[in-house]
Every structure is written in structure tokens, then in C-alpha cells.
Image 1 (cartoon, one colour):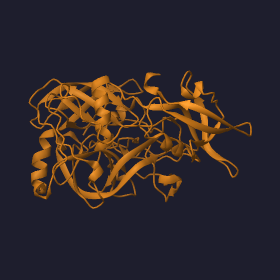
Image 2 (cartoon, rainbow, N blue to C red):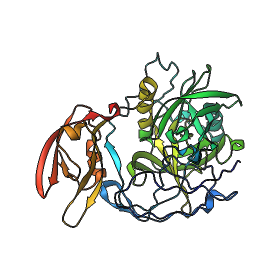
Image 3 (cartoon, rainbow, N blue to C red):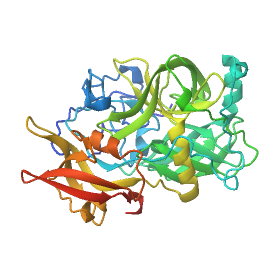
Length: 427
């Protein structure tokens, strides 16, 4: 494996009042993540030697998870970091992100046949369709690819990295993680037969870590997609990808579903994702590769791993959420989401809790509704809001054009405003 000389990176998100703990250079250039950042390591040092900083992390419902590390976000020019993300943690007090809510229903991903003639989805599997591990690997491997990228790092030097991908259609559309192709100046794909193709990025959505790339080929073997909504803890799963080194392509590892994590927030990353937590071994280069059920169906895209002193903490994007985004990326090259047009963070004092408005998108919904920097949103509709995550959660399921009544504090006085959700992708 090629090693590259990288300096440690911290989160690229601007933190209003954050205390960051730098992490020593301790991981190989090839890392697995999806939504995190990898700290490159000394030459030849294995990823297992990474030691994350232990920190608490908001759990669902505004609670606090016990000492769960938060992976660091890969910078936007993050090609030089590798394409997979073994998480290295940095402590931060407040997460900042552009606030918007995804509104796609789980079954809205039937892509027009004129665009993707061989999109392969099946929801009627039965007990008789179960496969052995050998049969699963034989079925899925021809639908897995290695994605290689080149780009310029922040030092102006050419750098390379790789990840994995999933053949989406027989005419060359491929799913992968957005961080795999982030900052790439060139992308290539190597298929199961060892043939390499030049690829182009059709669209990448950094907020969901989802991307679609395209190669000029026909007669490919598309993966069969299942329903992540039917996954339960204890289900058998297999991960397939290219961990650590391109010579280790089509590595298969097995495990089980540990938990389903809806709206799991990684504060340092600015991500709230619906994830399948599993314990199949994933490593650098697995990013973008499939998590497969006992029927040989893709139910997730491997994206995040928490490493260091922590074991068997792997996360895959739930495929029910990915497929609607892939449809948008294929048809328009972007993902349209309703949003209120602010950046913010959780405001937490003994006397007041809410979502602090740190900035307002000029001309956006919040701006038109009269919100200003320094306002503290305490209610959305009839729901009390004590964290930025809770505000985002309230907006989930709403559509562009829907109205919401926001209650906020300004200069120690309570105000309300009616806000119409807009399409932030048009900003």
C-alpha cells in the first residue's frame, strides 16, 4: 500500500466556542469512514493503533450517550485523506451545520425506467430465498467495484485514494459514498473481472454521504437491493469491499446487525443519519461498499467506523434512505431538501435551552421570516425545541412549501414567526 505524508486534520466545521483536542498522527493513509476524518499515521502504522479521544455524544431524544467517540469530518478537499473513514475523534462543545430536513418517504425510490432500465429492487423475498455465506458472496461480488481517485491535497501535491462502490444499473451507474469522490480530479472504477473504466461523478450529496458515479459500460451485473426497514437486530449480514489495500479487493466479512440507529447525530461531523449499526469487520477502503442481508440483497452502504480502543462499531447508511437520494442525483445531479436557511448550534444554559441562530442565508426562508443571528428558537409548531437536533427532527417529513410556526427569544422577549420551507439546494 502506498503511504502518504499527511498532517493531522481537525473538523472543518467552524465551531463557535469549541475546545478541540488534537490527535496524534496515528493511522494509515487508507482509512474507512464515511463521515469522518482520518488522521494519517506514521508510515506502516496499522489503523488499529489509533486512539480516539473519548467524548460524550448526544443520543436520540436529546440524551447523552456514555463516552461514545465522535468521528471527525473529512474536509471538503478530503481526497488526500483516503476514501474510507476510520474515525479519529475530536472533542467539540457545539456542532454547527446548515439546517434542513430530508423528506423522502422510504418507498419513493422507483427510478424511471427510461433512466435506469435495470434498477434491481425486490421486496418479496421468502424463507426459501435464504442463501449460504458462499452463495451470498458469489451473488454480490460481481456487483461490487473498487473506486480509485486522484486529486490535489492542500499542499498542492498529487494524492491517491480508493474506496468501494455498488453497481446500480447494468448501464454503468454506481453508488458510493460522497467522501470517496470528494475533491477528486479523476475517478476510475475496476470491476469484478479486473477491467478498469474512467468514471465521472454524476452527483454527490455531502450531507448524506451519498454519491452516484457513471462508467461507460453495458451488460454489468447490478446489485439486488432489499429493504432496510425490515432489518432487525440479530440479522446476519456480510460486508464486501476493498479494505486497506487494493490488492485485497472483494474481501468479505460477516457479522450481525447490532442496532438500527435512526437520526443518529455525529456532532463533530454535522451529520444526522439513519444507520445500520453492525459488527462485521470494515476497514479503510470499505467505504461505499455494500452491507448485504441473508438473501444477498444490499441493505446498506458502509460508511463509518469508530476505531481505537473501541471494537466492532461499524455503521452503514440505510438503503431505504439512500435510494431516493440516488434518484435525485441521477436525474438532477443534486439533492433538493426543504430547509429554513440557517446555521446554528445548541444553546444550553440553566435558564434557557434552544437552537441558537448563528447565521441566516440571505434571501432564504428564515431571512424572509425575519429571523436574525442571535435568535434562540425554542419551539417549532407545537413541539418544544431544546437542541439544534430537535429542531431538525421536527422539520423531517415536511415538504418544500410547507409552513411552520417558530417561537424564538430575542432580547429576552418571546416572538413568533410563520416560515415557509424553501429549497436550499437552489441557494
